[in-house]
Picture 1 (cartoon, rainbow, N blue to C red):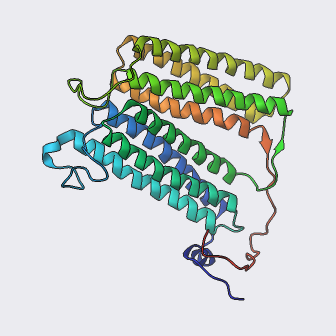
Picture 2: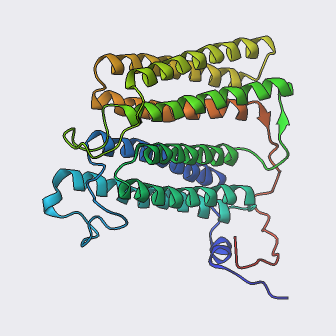
Picture 3: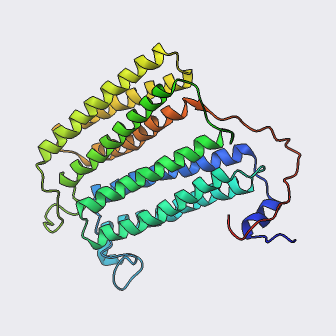
Length: 327
């Protein structure tokens, strides 16, 4: 019975990237997932959220911004175009993972998960524009971007491991504690989106009163966010002591220290931001650190288990097995 070859399998027969290239490709996708978080924040901080007045076109009559739309139109449209750069980085990761020998389906699945997250978040971004920057859709847009960061990080970390079953390096309750920490950090990030929804930067010029805001007092939301940050710092410190007591793997201890350092820096920046009426540069840095904090938290449970790398001779050709028309 003849094989049914699709473009991916045809390419895989002619190009087999190294494991190092796969790791570089997955890391590039991770970097771009963080970049898109920061540039999305830049759109809001420059009051360019409605620089393009509709979606998927920029205006009713033009795919690109017109001269009359000025700076705001350029900023919003540039952010939209960066989605294609992000997609290209993810596409490279998918192709590198698919063509590497041996083919690891787990990696290509994570790559395709990133692709569909980008597509769904692009639609969500369009809904955000069409609803006039509704703060709840803006918050969902940010959370979906963080979900993309999560999957991109997982693909990068898995590219450095094998496909064997995960084996815990600590007792299960300790591993579960690390997931509690990840959950708390995730809730901290989500709380930050609520502060944004009631805060100083609606995404349009300040004299635009049309953009809705979350109808909760900004100071109360900021205090709630700060309280959650204190809880996160306390839990991170507790995790450090627990890891030391149970002699957790050194990489896990190092990652827990990194998370605590980023949390403290983020806390200082947040307080400065609050008492200086949230200047744009401070808010932008706060968003960048939010993505880095999320990454730092996610890396901790990944350091508490190992996956064996399957030994495959470099010069052994891949088995020629039947393939279907899908990846």
